[in-house]
Image (cartoon, rainbow, N blue to C red; front, side, top):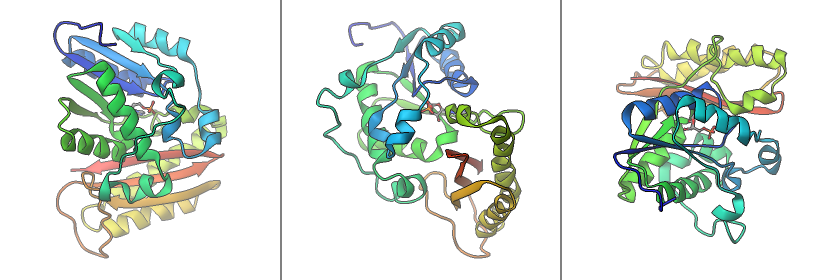
Amino acid sequence: MRAYKPEGTVGFVPTMGALHSGHITLIEKALSECDTVVASVFVNPMQFNQVEDFDKYPRVAEIDAKMLYEAGCHALFLPSAAEMYPTGKAELGMTFGKVEQVLEGAFRPGHFSGVGVVVAKLFNLVQPDKAYFGQKDLQQLAIIRQMVKDLDMPVDVVAVPTVREASGLAKSSRNQRLSPEGLSEAAHLYEALHAGAGILHVNPHAAAQTAREVLSLRPGWKVEYIEAVNPDTFEVLSGRDLPHHGPAALAVAAWLEGVRLIDNIVIV
Ligand code: AMP
């Protein structure tokens, strides 16, 4: 990658492929701000804590390449696992303190270490000026920001709002694994968040409770967590009946038809 040194600013969009219009929105944002835009597609084995989830992750590199080309992306980095991890695994690990002790970090042990290591490697290989991440993976965004700050990486991290279907369902590569009925049921995840978000500042604890109740009335869901958090520190806003000042997020992870879906709403 380093042999190619374009003039001007380089924007970078790391992905795991099976691209959809959410990813393309990140590409478009990068194109609007940078001279050259590089995307990567790499299903990173080190960030999956379940072999089955890794095996079932959709891999459609040729379609991805076509979508990127049509969007105007200048380069695609498509490394193999052997190129990224010559010894078969990442020997290095990363920890992120309090930010990773809750929600995704608590339910997916080792996930953020895998994310941090692969993003650090990709930053070193691509050497971008700006890197674009979706707010859909809100906790990932927080750990990347922390890594860049703590390691003084010369990269601006840019957050891009979540792109949704007309139904409200957040676009996700994992949606492909849902049946048509599952796809329409999945929209209730956003409905539940929306119901709680209205009172997020007034009473974060009740907001999470409201969202939990809405989802509990729907068939087929297995909720891992629904929590109100500070979107920067991921401190859980659990004080009962206490108002919260400043940004707040309501974040959820839930299973439907054996597919793990995550989503969040941030209110500033
Ligand atoms: P992934 O391929 O799922 O690892 O996602 C690659 C990047 O695209 C991450 O920064 C995600 O947060 C972002 N992304 C995924 N889905 C969406 C979406 N619906 N809206 C905005 N960004 C997204």
